[in-house]
Length: 240
Image (cartoon, rainbow, N blue to C red; front, side):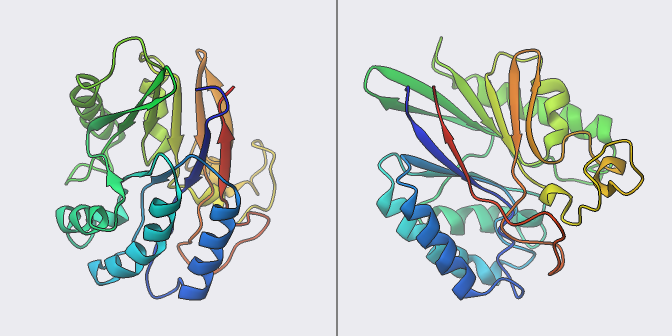
């Protein structure tokens, strides 16, 4: 697996505020990275399944160009209209949506578990303890499909779940959701101007806890069309 190149995108929020020209430019950039595979960590569409075909046109040329394909998970926005319909529609574009499932890829003699967890949607989704317990159930379901002794990376939309994932038998977690803070007035976590720190412990970039790694992508889309000192992000990771 050494040298495996993985592109992460997150929070594309395909909808009325994300234009085709922008998505086409992103496709051009990603194809130029010559990656082996792509992962999409949720909030692929914004809030309306009408835009599934638009998202499909974004992913299809990438799926066709990447030797090991593309994998995705639902985020909270993918559930707003109808989560099952969103997942089905995105799968039709060639994106392999993992919903509490594990895919095993092979490269040479190496194998890699790619575990994808659903967003713990439901009436108690704002209760952090209940959400974490639901996510643990999802993890246990996906864990049954792991290839023994192979490294495991987890796709999980909300970085908060790293609080328990850092204690599990995994190696790397990819998340999104936070948009990197989107409006970053001060990077100092002790500053009141660091708005993201009021909501998230993990909100942008690379974290290590208990020898488990987390990467939080700042996203390609947005909640509203304004970013300050927090540009959209396409992440390239190379395994060493």
